[in-house]
Image (cartoon, rainbow, N blue to C red):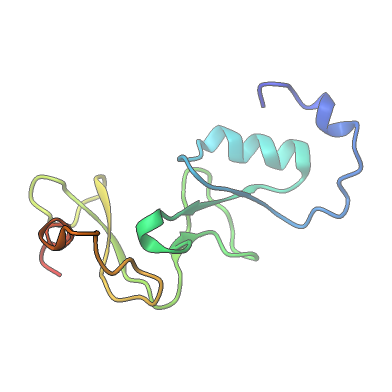
Length: 121
């Protein structure tokens, strides 16, 4: 976005099937911009080293809502919790119910620190 659309339009990107973003939250403006410039929106994702894989994403074929990462992968239970009460909330922390195959199994020499990451299941 910073460099503008002209640099993109100079290249043949007709073989591009979809765009994905990882690492940082993707702002809605970038999703809208990519749709206008590439003809395809970005698929936002959520994952961390501890999750071992993408756990929330906009799947190919889904309607992409700017500002939304999409849905949890099958087998992943995700919700948003208030960080003060660990109760469900509209805004807060993303929480995953443990137990998917790629989940980290512990912290090296820190079992208590690992267990402290899990509240109310």
